[in-house]
Image (cartoon, rainbow, N blue to C red; front, side, top):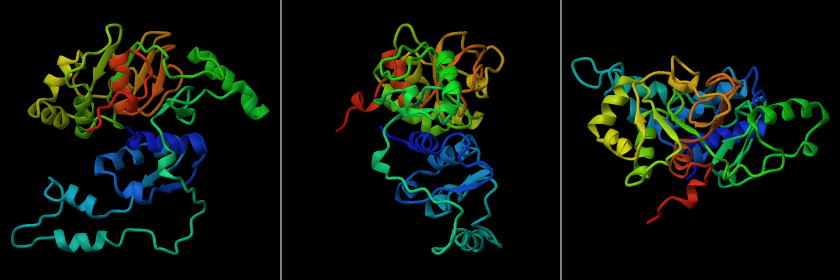
Length: 296
């Protein structure tokens, strides 16, 4: 039930939405290396949400396998194949074992649970089974903005977020609308129905993703669950066109930002992974995906 979005939301919650300001962040370690290429893209995409100038994961065989044969990749056939030559160069694009960083943060992957935000910046994150911090736990300088954020969100300090009623679910954006994300959601909702009082929008990240989803029959699975598969685009990530969340309504979103008014005037955004978003779509409330998944 823990995926790449949970990893990066956990990191941002640890260091804050400004914790990497001015830096370039390299993500490394066994948990990162085990991720697919699309999952790695989600993590690097969210680097800016911790203030970073950018994020990177050193290329490895997963990277090369993903790139080979793609439209703009170096040719691996013909009279002048460039693939092997380029790949040898790319293999050197990693940090040396004795590289010195301005700051190193070590995280145990087993400590990460499905994550969700409760405030109005991506750094205000917590596990879905956790408790919203109390003002008493904060520095005096942080209390005013913290309470202002919770007031906007209509949430109370020191309470559980699990079980919070949800009105909308948005699965999309450049952060989590790749084919892997749609497969993940479709796999979970197959044979299920969305909650009656929840509206669900699924927006592929590109026409290519949309085409692939239809070819794989994912559109039929999503539609059978009551999910609305819309045309590719930015959509509700930033309240584009008519894709806005009404004032005061709660939306679990797989996008990257939860600022005040981001998804519409006075809309309340909770950032989460595609799986946590799908769980909320089915139950109508913030839920722990681990309690709903069928393990074989």
